Amino acid sequence: MDHDTSIQLLNESFSRRLAGVDQRITEAKNLAISADRRLREQGRKPALSRRDVLFKALTARLIAFGEKTADSVKTAERLYPNLPRVAKTVTNPAMTGVEGWAEELVSEGSVGAGLLQTLAPASVYAALSRRGLRVDMSGLSQANLLNRATPTGSPTCFVGEGNPIPVRAMDFSGVLLTPKKAAVISHYTREIARRSAPAIETILRTYLPEDITVAVDATLLGSAAATATQPAGLLAGVSPIAASTQTGVSGVVEDLGALAAAIANAADPVFIMAPATAIALAALPGAVPVILSDSVPFRRVIAIDASDFASGSADGASFEIVDDATLVAADPAVPIVDGAGALGNPTSSLWQLDLIGIRVIEELAWALRRTGRISYIDAVNWLGTTP
Image 1 (spheres, rainbow, N blue to C red):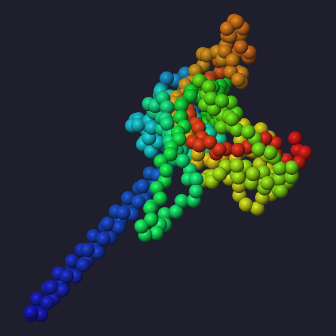
Image 2 (cartoon, helix red, strand yellow; image 1 turned 90 degrees about the horizontal axis):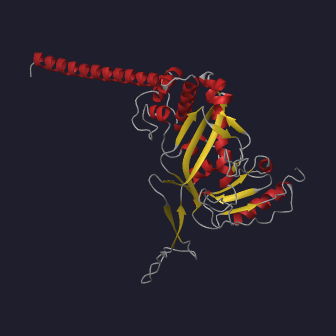
Image 3 (cartoon, helix red, strand yellow; image 1 turned 90 degrees about the vertical axis):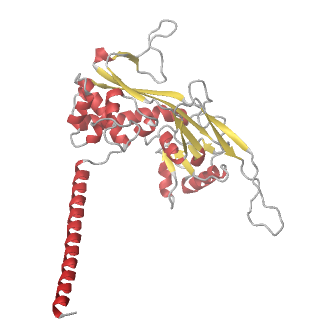
């Protein structure tokens, strides 16, 4: 190979390398531009949780109703111009990750299952649902949950040569989940509905979950048997165990230990109590899994294996907003006019008082999959003479 040919080959090789470097530089620039664009889009369109979408949709509908505006979707666009997920065309109302699914929410008020759980995540019902078994009961009148029998001995998988391999007994028991209609009504003045979005949204996020929590947890943590209209309380048929006579930390340790011991082999033990009762837990050196609820009487402590809690909700959950209804603000509920013709008290006209009512409805079901998975003490002595 002569000198000129060698020089030509070197030049061609060098040119190809330069072209490859240029191509890689161009690709790196394109990647950087794409990443920057995505970051900017994410800054303009922050992802919303299902709960955020629900409350923003409720806010848009409430303000549109107060303003007597028919198009609540346009109201949502005006209130939240930088959140297109609340305003664009609906794709699937049950998929929170799809942009625009809230249009059906603000227009029709019908959503998928799990509405009450989403609106009131701090309720005991929602907390136990997150830890236990959740069943989609869409289209079902009942769901039969089968449980395998607990081994009576200590099973082992190690066997000697020629010896039989153990086979776990095929003994099953079941519990039925039957959805019951749960409904909550909250009402607000039209002046509240006319306020700016941040103010009314904050009010909705505060008071609507409170109403739902009180309504659902009072039944969930009660001791009433199941009826044709409501599920059984978790304490139905359960007798309280004796409280320790000790006060302070000693009493806390003894009572929590007794409650836990009453639930054999609990996979996810958790204690439920009132906030005032839980003050004594601050003296313990370690963390205690606890759910706080105002629906639990002071000095009552409940222990439950949350892994055995099963819950479900049917499709067709909905919320509606009206201003021309008559209601009786009473708990427990009473009819507007009873069988004897007596008027319920206190009876209010939303139209006369210029109020707006929000009604949330969903079919719920819950049950413990096995017996012996809950225990409680009715009067702990942790706090001494504190009333």
